Amino acid sequence: MNGADEARRGAFFQQLRRVGASIEATHDIDDIMLNLSAGICELFGADRLSIYTLSDDKGSLVSKVKTGLTSFKQLKLPVSADSIAGYVALSGTLLNLLDVYDEEELRRHSAMLRFQQGVDRRTGYRTREMLVAPIVYPTDGSLAGVIQLINNRAGGPFPPMVEEGVRQLSQMLGAAFARASEAPRHDRGRFAALMPETVLPRSRLEQALHTAASSQRDIEDVLIDDCGIKTVLVGRALADFFSVPYFTFDSEHRRPVRLLDQFRQDDVLRQQWMPVVDDGNSLFVLAVDPHQARIDGTVAQAFPGVRPVWCVTTRREFRLMVAQFFSARDGKPGDAQASPALAEPAVASAMSTRAAAAAMQAPLQGGALGIGAGPAARARSDSLPGQETTSPHGDLAGIVAGLAAQAHGHGIRELHISTSPGDAPGEIRFQVSGILLRD
Image (cartoon, rainbow, N blue to C red; front, side, top):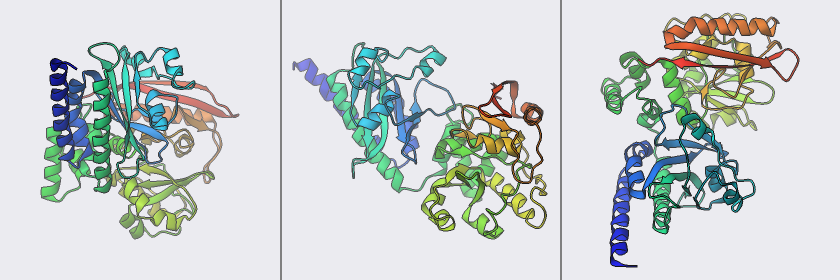
């Protein structure tokens, strides 16, 4: 190694130590993601950077940083060889790839290894080189996430010095993730998903947090009432943060018969969770903080031996649903009227209870249940308890009418709805997409 190489190496690792000091100085993982990602790209000579964290069920990776992308929706990849990041998470090995489109190169690592080309196709970007390393917790070596550097600005594979640096950076991030997992989740982190789309600039979020603290108001109320953030965006931010579906308030939701019989209204408001659907295969539990509800053990006590499917909602919508469900206790299910306190129900709330329940059976992702909860929501002709049987075409027409009625209020300029026959008799599959006009 000549003098110039030694100087370059010394400067590189000196700057990496500065990055490590910045990481160590904060317990807020979202601050690390937001403030350091551009500097990490510059230091490592990478065009783009992705950082994934392991989901709560440990079965998938959820993107936290996607430099170069402005999409609101988080990427979610299974821990498997179906993607490069998923393979690194599964195998625990570092990969330094010259061309991710070279299938022969991928097969040298695993016959099942694939590069997911969807983002490139949607954006027109061309991924070439990729350096990917696992992030593990320092205490037990278990997986915490994955760091992924994309496209070496100098061309060719990432050099050995950068490989060594990425290994060190992954250790720093593992320690930071461990600290973050031990600390309580902060409101800043819960609503960080609002910022990538510039829906809420960082300065406005900080101001909202200060206002909520000084006035002892709920941060959700400040965001919705003072900052003008739509309830659906606050709910989606929560869904992204907790990596669970977002369940919206709907005046057509019927009280979950039998599920709530063992609960009092005061207890539900105090514990901030309640069961909402039991389809015979899965118990869906709604909470304002699924993480806290999961660790306090009360769900396991109420439903021993059951592994619930968690959903999240805003505190405002949770209070409305509790009032609706428990006011129906003295009447027949479904008699409860919607409270006028919710000025803007989420788009998905236009769906009928039947369609929303059917949509829950689709693969779950962060998003509103019923729309965005899976590849396609399903409208079935099968009746739920207490409902009249109508044709699936009638259900679909009602769903479309409700969506159209609320679209303008949510800034939706266009709606595109495609239908196709379902897998079972009387079943229609439909997908909804559109254009949301930002202020």
